[in-house]
Image (tube, rainbow, N blue to C red; front, side):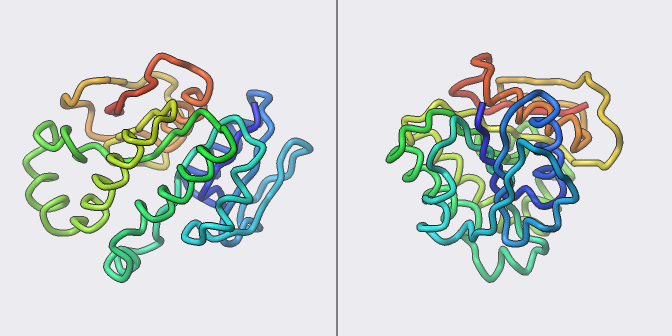
Length: 211
């Protein structure tokens, strides 16, 4: 497959690029500073672009079979300054995918967004979603609604707390808004995001991830 990864320079996006290449896919790594992605491969193309610029996103989307959105702000300040951080770029991505007939959209959201809010822990609901990270969670909710209304074959990933540990290769995937283990490694999350570009198991679902 030809997979576009938006937000591929570091973190989960970079791990998605590595996982996709390891599985034989052709990858376009899109980021403001793609040179940060410490990876060279004959099937990898690095593209500099702005997730919040419609033309930039539209140019990147054309010619792919699937798109993974992993974009995030490097700090909470970024979400305060731009409360539609996730939803604006996702809107541009959806419009481009509809224009060019790109069918599969895989989006990184978070456990506790939307109908999974009651399944989040008391601590997460009270101190994290309610106070510390309320801005990104509010916009993830808007982002998810855009994705659900897009008409695309979508998969929404809702991981719990992300860690930098190695992949376990075994984690909980729940297509219902239920409690799941309190953390998951970025490597396992990347595995799920790449897998969701091809698999139809969770198409049209928001999937709670932990383990």
